[in-house]
Each structure stands twice: as C-alpha cells, then as structure tokens.
Length: 362
Ligand code: SF4
Ligand code: SF4
Image (cartoon, rainbow, N blue to C red):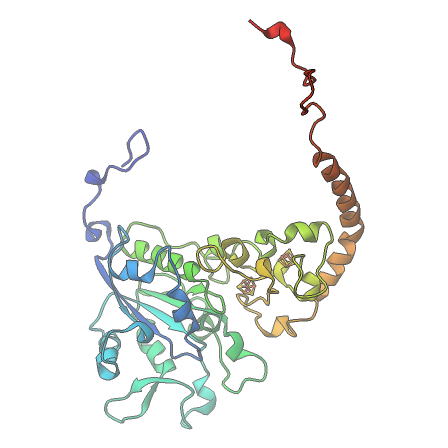
C-alpha cells in the first residue's frame, strides 16, 4: 500500500515475514572446499554496501535474521563444532538455508575409489573424507537457494582450464543448468576472480529480501548472472573509453590511454568493475591501468590467454577507428584551443566592452 506521496505505509503491511510467505530467520552454509583459494570469502569482507557484518548483525532493515557459517569468518572452535550445522542440514534438521559454494567442482567420477580431490570433514563411521561432491549432493536439493561465489564455482575458472587433472567444472555444470532449489531458484551465479565485494553482497541481499518475502527473485541472464551487474561490458563503463574513441592507444603499461593494444579484453567482457571500482569506488582494472583479462567470463581463462597479447578483435577495431579517431582528435584539439581563451571583454580598461545595453537600466 502506498500513499499519494509514494511512501509506504508500514502499519498496513503484514508485520511479520511469515505473513508475507517469507522467513524470519535463515542460515547461510558456505562451503569453500571447492577447488578454491578462499579469495571470494576474503573479497566479500571488503564490501561496505552492505557489509557482511551489517547483514549478520541485523542492521539491514527488512532482512531475515542471518546465521552465517563460513570457515574463514567462523567464531566456532572449528572441527565438529563448525561442521554441526552442515551435518544437521544434510540430515534435514536445519531449514531454511542458503548454500554458497566457493571453488570449482572436481570430477570425482574420474578417480572413483581412488582418493579425493577435495573434502570437507570426515564420515563419522568410516573416518573417510567426505567429498565436496557428497556435500553438494546432500545439501543442494534441500537448500532454499544455491549461490555460486566466484568464477571457479560459477563456470569452473582457473582450476578448470585446459590440461587440468581434476576435470573441474562450475556448479551449474555439476547440478544441471535446469536445477531448481527448494525455493524454486536456479543456481545464482556471481562470477569474478575474485567476486567484486559489493556485487556479491548486493546479490546476497536481494536473495535474502526474496527469502523475507519482500522482493521478487533476482533477475538473472542466460548464464545465471544478476542482470543489473553483468548486463554491460567493461568497455561500456571504462573511463578510458574516450581514448579509444579518439584512437589513442597505450603502447606500454604506464600510459593513461586505452589499453586494448596491450591486452585489454574490455569491449567483449561482461563486468561492472571499472564503473564501480573495487572498494568504495577506488581501484578496478583497465580504468586504473590493468588490462581486463575477462575473469568474470565463462570462457576464462583459456579464451583470453596469453593475457598480455593484443586481442584479435581489438587489433581490427583499433585499425578501423584510426582515421575517424585521428580526425576527431585533431578537430577537438582546435576547438579546445579556442575554448582555452577568455573572451576579449574581460579587461581592466576604462570602457565597458561586454555588450551591456543601458536601455534596460531602470
Ligand atoms: S582500456 Fe579496455 S575497457 Fe577501457 S576503453 Fe580501452 S579497451 Fe575499453
Ligand atoms: S574488469 Fe575484467 S579483469 Fe577486472 S574484474 Fe572485470 S572481468 Fe575481471
């Protein structure tokens, strides 16, 4: 219900989440035992809008109470104390929960019976390691939502590059791209190597508002990425785009100009980092001098290597834009010289020459 001014009348809203078909409380079970470096967990802690502390302390209005279980951030004693909620969820004794997977999923089938690529706790009866694959098999069908954090978990990433021995893949490759969680959501992919801190926290917040019953499901594209974060290219948000348009290309890595000739893949990569910055608007990639290596993309890294060579398409487009860019640069230089002069009537002489007409004087 909204008033004429457009503000929400809180008193007329159902007061509790349950009355809106949402949850008052939810757990986040975060497993970073994929083929992973924990970089996404570390990156997430840099978010300010919102901060993970704000989410777990209940400082974001309208979210359910959040119980976060992440090994890097856990205040538990570790071991079985830390594993308890994961074991409870696997038994079906803990609901609702959001499952977050960090790291790529190895192919256990290629070594079945011959060891473990990666594991998380031990089987209490046999003492044998419980594989990541076992945990996903137990938890994903029970999870209200399943979130893949980082390019390794979303699409396989660096661990799934050509020549890897583990047969690694992304979570949707493992579960199936038509997988639906208990909350009827597909896998929610937040790529990035690592995730941009606020990209992840914004997505998690949207999922939590959806869990609270106060937001629709997050809009995802065909690669299951949040549309509002990955719907534009790096190039479309890069503040070196004006150099590109004028065909001013860097020849080395110390230049402020466009980096396409030194290896930037920005024009064909879906990512918002140069537009958003890394932490609090500071940092990024091509905007601050680092070529975009396409770390958010399903084809990363193989499709972008060797990183420091000029992309094939980049050489073609930079050749095509050369005559236009050179002409425009020259014209803008001429106009800029004219605009760098003050008008002639700004002087300290005895006659007023600004064109003022005394006819209008009262
Ligand atoms: S540095 Fe990269 S992203 Fe930026 S304008 Fe050049 S090609 Fe585009
Ligand atoms: S700009 Fe390119 S390298 Fe930087 S985070 Fe985005 S995709 Fe990765």
